[in-house]
Amino acid sequence: MAGAGSTSELLRVDDLSVNLSSGVPAVDSVSFELRRGECLALVGESGCGKTLTGLSLLLAVPPETGSTAAGSIRLDGCELTALGRKRLRSVRGGRISMIFQDPAAALNPLFTIGSQVVETILAHLEVSKAEARQRALGILEDVGLKNPQRFLGLYSHQLSGGQCQRAMIAVALSTEPELLIADEPTTALDVTVQRQILDLLVRLRREKGLALLLITHNLALVAHLADRVLIMYAGQIVESASLEELFEAPRHPYTRALLECIPRLDARPGLPATIPGNVPVPGRWPAGCRFRERCAAARPGCERPQRLQPLEARPGTLVRCWLAAGMNLDNE
Image 1 (tube, rainbow, N blue to C red):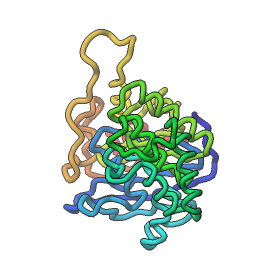
Image 2 (image 1 turned 180 degrees about the horizontal axis):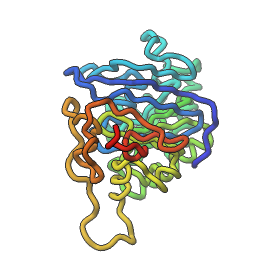
Image 3 (image 1 turned 180 degrees about the vertical axis):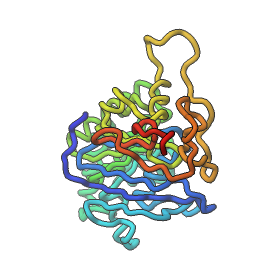
């Protein structure tokens, strides 16, 4: 799908930080842009801050979890952090929609699928209830739920995992958003259903011109969908590159370690590759490079307490690593 997006910018995020309710930062000065029709993948292990980043774009971080502490989020030039509650509500679910990790939990078990799709349409589009119902039938069919009239009257507990995921996608797309945030859209689905959901996202993106922010740890999914990739570790973006450059010549040691963990048919028999250790918890990030304690390429100087900013490794790419960017630590 590379190259599918246009060149006009839809979303720009600058120096976004999110603090947990304890005041500890969990997302630290994240910046990126997303073009219309483009798929941007946000990749990293669990605990790196990916979901909090996605929720913060909607200013929807639950108060008991944390809050957006700083930064700018501009959608088509409009600063979302400055909007009042009423205008922000028109953006959430309207211009920006989100597919959550657990669709069965995200769908309300007390209401039918049809009522949830219709309610979303009525909240964001100026149409009659009859028109909203017709739109709901159309979008349910678009996402591959055959006999949509039947699904209008079903509840989430009556659906399979794949059907719940399709219903969640239907709710998200019912208002014709400009940006779709897909948070682990194939988690807990079997391989066959994962492929169906993947094909569905590819088709809908092509037909509707959606910009897609794909939050995932599944690099196979990234390879099929993304135009550009952001690698996230311990609340920071550590590498940014096009899909081709990231897979062909990854620069950050963390990116290389993630790629080495992908199972390969030509790999020698033995235990699969792993990354030693765990992602450090917020508030306990090491000084200097936050990956250095797990990094096979770490050397004296990586622990320098100075704030390590993303550096241009080559045109169009950024990497948060002194060595990968070609800097000599001995002379710093």
